[in-house]
Length: 268
Image 1 (cartoon, rainbow, N blue to C red):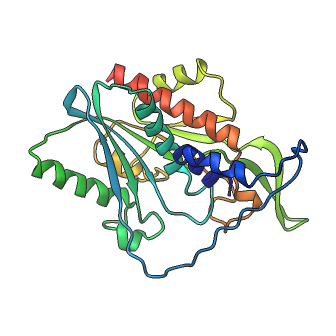
Image 2 (tube, rainbow, N blue to C red):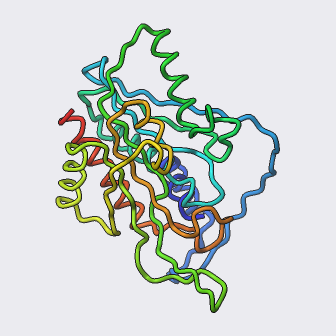
């Protein structure tokens, strides 16, 4: 699956040279190789959410970047790859931030009855656990920004009643961006205008009971929010070619999100 290939390249680039030993010594770059990884499924496995903390100069103010880690296909669950990519860039370039960054990888998006609280998104439980941890460490964090990333690189499809299937339109599916304040909206618009990004973007004003995705608990908990979330027709389908993200679009969107993170650190 394409999105998993990206993660593999990012985090295991040191192993890529080993593939040179199995590649054919041929100038024909069109030759196709198949790599088979064997494994087995496990059922009823307990999963856990986790956080990555990047200390900033101001230990009392935080930017929370969150996503969910589970889903039925590559688009539904690729937010974690974007967060890992951002973390890789921070480490590789030894970047320093004014605010403390908390990256939240939240399990249970598709098991809200188990993972959510009072029927709300799984991030609410993550926020509760994070608050308990901060209290135990005698930390009192001010909420600078909640930045949510979900469903990147989607392509646009239409539901054909005649052919009884989804048909590609050769367009990018809109990426919706919830911006809870005027400052956040202006920040998104400025970043979009100054960046060469593929895709279509629609900025939405959030409401507490009409906020799609794992950014909702942040907004309901009083965080200023910017939430990226695609809503393609194939979003919840089982994995197939139509659920594979467009890699260039996914990369551009991840770069945009990273730029917004850096800009927000200077602004808030």
